[in-house]
Length: 239
Image 1 (cartoon, helix red, strand yellow):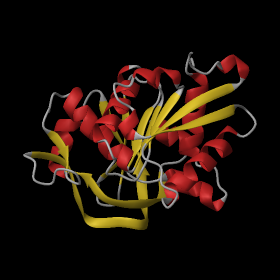
Image 2 (spheres, one colour):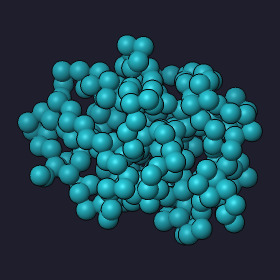
Image 3 (tube, helix red, strand yellow):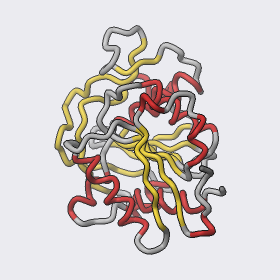
Image 4 (cartoon, helix red, strand yellow):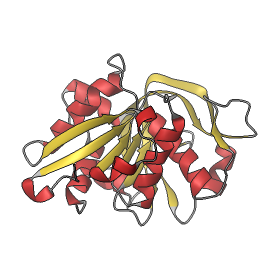
């Protein structure tokens, strides 16, 4: 099957992750996507279990890819393959929670050449752990984020001060920030103590990743602004 034909008012979005009905974010994501689409476009959602991603040959079928929460993934390499595909092929990409963490690992390995970059959840004793346990866990927490102006995420929310829900124990090793971020990858929002909470890739139609879980708003009957922006980007993605 080929990519969705947007002239027929339909888009296809691949959800990169291992579905579990017990994960609130997994319950919320389809609701969030359908709320964001409203009546503008039909959204075809397909879960992409990480062990089945393989070489990623079928990823070109999708108008957008979302790397979802609930890591560790059953096949970390599968998730990294999908993230790399979205980054290199300019496919609209959203990463939330574990998706944010693994987007950093993918970028470090494949863009910066840090072949040994690891996630502390799966390789805690590795020499180059770039994602480490947070000093203060953010499991089922709501916290403030200060967005940077003139970013995709700030335009999506229409303001710079937001509060969002987390279910997270891991984040970026802070001393690596200056080495990871620069001309191409930009910090787009920070927590109360200046911690990196969201990021964007420059020169990409839509590549946004957040440590928080904006999709959870759909469980309260709200349309998440960032998910709406992602859907719009998918609608604009040329087939």
